[in-house]
Amino acid sequence: MSPIWIIAKREFTENILSLRLFIGLIVCLALFIASTYVLMEDYEKRLSIHNAAEIEHRNALEKVKVYSYLRLDIAKPPEPLSVICLGMERQLGSTVKVSYEDVPTEARILGGGNPLLNIFSAVDAVLMVQIAFSLFVISIAYDVICGERESGTLALVVSNPVSKYHILIGKYLGGMASLLVPLAIGWIAAALLINVNPMIEFHIAEWNRFGLLFAVLTLYLSVFFLLSMLVSAITYRSARALVWLLFFWIVIVFIIPNGAVYIAKQVRPIPSKAVVNIESAAITTAFNEKIRDYGRKHQSRSYFMSERSVISGSYPFAYHVLTASREGMLWYLDGAQFYIPHRIEYAEQIGNLHQEYYRSLKRQTVLAENLSRLSPAWVYYNISAGLSGTDLRRHERFIQQAQDYRKALMAYMQEQEAFSSINWFTSVNLNDMPSQVGLVESDEEAFFANITPKSWDDVEPLDLSGMPVFTSGLASGNNALGEVFPDLVYLIFLNILLFLITGAMFLKSEMR
Image (cartoon, rainbow, N blue to C red; front, side, top):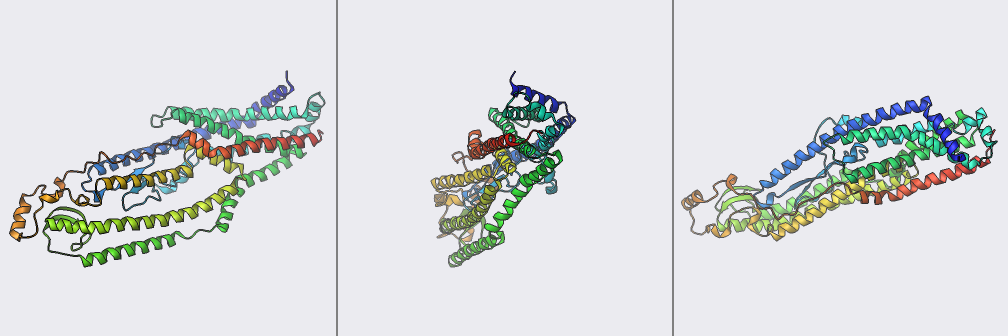
């Protein structure tokens, strides 16, 4: 039998029968089941809110009667794997407004509830592995070498014709196998809970990513196991090894990620959002002044019309007009052809302002991310969020998809002559409208008494069957893996490097 197998089997048996591992099994099961259950409840609530909002948006769209009211709320569905890694899904919002006057740059959060309770549902399985189970690995492996050196067992082992590398490999394989038993049981329990929930649909792609999440979990905990072996190899007292490992754990899990955020804020400060809001308000004020100036020069109260919604009664800017004289309709059309291009222009200026502000946030975030890569804990969570589709990149793709959809929607509206005809504010045919010339008040009343439709409620909705449909969809497994691949390679490299350093230190260390 191979010496590696003998040592691994011995290490595995000792750990699997220890009280520490039994406690770990109970803790893993309890935490994984509790976390998954809470996040499944949270997912069901977010999915119900999303589905209700989708129905509401479709119903609102079916009631649009003129193009001036064509505004859409589009939403990103919650990711099924958020029950394992919530990531940034809840903080960044999931719905945006799209129209000729709205450039989507930020998403808002659907639903209500108590925001103070968000902290309780944010403790997902990945976060528990990142913090609690990495500490559990240290509690199991801190004395894997120095403990046997203190008891004299290590000296007996090396007195046999066995390579030190065989000892190291055997201890690593046996120790990791014993640690993965409670984790695998907890992971399987979480999978069973997900599988029996009718609201959560996991397809092959989701199950593949679920398996990848466990593989990444293994790589991450392996880093702490190898770090424990390294410290245990170069120290001669178990208590000292434990103190050093606790120090390293605090640095890796807390100090580096939080320190990276602090350094990024100092090196790349960002302007206050209040400045952006003030600049946006200034752009809006300039637009309103331009519109008022045009309206004052072209105002009129002499045209015959009925049931209208306007910016101002005497300005030629209408949201909708039921009926009017031909001249009145053309007057409103002239106003719309002035209003619409300027409204689009100023909306895009505000959108560019917010996008530039976001780019400054992004530059700061990228610096913090790059500095945080010194911490395997942050790398692990970043990979997990990427595979789950709950990271910042997924949100950015959604915003970009919304912006692309706005361009398609604008092109569709131009094809329908929405911006250049009276269809912008009315559903009637211009040729059916009487001329203002020769009409007197009695003629106006007689004409409008016989006109159809008689009220805005009787107007037929627009036929929007040819309008482009927004599709966001869920995260793609291939894209997610490609995006996190560099971090995954880094985590693998870190394992190899730690193993080689541990081997070198173990070869140099005394066995007694």
